[in-house]
Length: 493
Image (tube, helix red, strand yellow):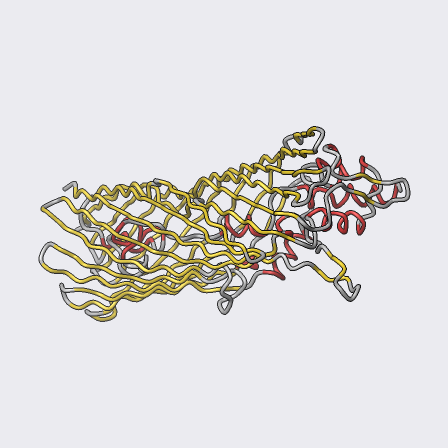
């Protein structure tokens, strides 16, 4: 038993930490929010420039500014999720009002040599919105989540409450405290939760967002070559509340049990971006940019509240709050872009971005994350993001449209977590003032196993032929995101 307990203590930090590979992917992913002009054009702004949000994609676009400009972009973000589980449907919706950016640019004319202007920018770009709610509901005739927990405990030789508390203080141990499980003298486990005949529900609510504070400079050489660089401080805050409930459909001693989990994450880091835009032809602009990895310092807190309701009363237990600190290194980004210019009438633009999510790395001074890093390298794959946009002018009016595809972290050919966005918008300029508006519709599909959100182990049941079969607890989810974006731009000189 001492040997088993030692093994548990060695591996316990990996199992009790709140973060998993999907959290790390979410912290590492960038979905450019941008100004209304950028959003309407699918954020295909790498070779376009002259827009504050383009600085987040290719800082060389700053060199195309001619006048000092102040930009502010509020937005409305509405996220809804449709789910299907065990033949039953679920639905939920969330609304947020983020600010996509606030920034100032200014330009200094240079009168000697080939350097025409030097431009500077200071401000904040919104890079991700954690606005999400989901509700899963279905009747399971075969198993309970606790069956997966028992398989996990058995595999790790959990034979005492003390060992269980060390192994899983926030998720599984609270079930022992609320009389939902017992560890018998012979090493087996027992529970009042029936093996099936349960209504299972899971609700998830996410709040927060990611931003990037930038200081950038751009150089304009003879209106042909533009170079840019930026130093950025990315930061985010995210709160995730998850409620899991199993309702007994039979008239047994247990009526239901529920566990509510809250995870709060805060991160702050640093990165740099370098870019070039060139005009090889009058009707063509091309650009390339490199984004270094973000290096984040992340602080997390995590706790659960568990309740069991019986015919003769109820039991409740609140776990201690667990606090974690670790360093996250995100993948680098490579961006190539082109803009086809049709005089003063319009343009068609395209961006290609390469991201390798296998490069996500976690480290800490008090724990070796080699196992998790290797797992990320095996589960994720390199992928690509593609953005296309267009703009057409009619006197003081501009009409825009765009499409963006953000590839799945499982590979460019995979559909799970791939995001497709369709956008349109317009702009109007009056003297020194410009107002732009955009509408963006995004769709994302995700298939996942309900029990895998809590355990890496399956739950098994005996079928009619007395064969042990892994329970199918797949959830099919479609997330729709509607955004309305408005930008106010003021030319200051």
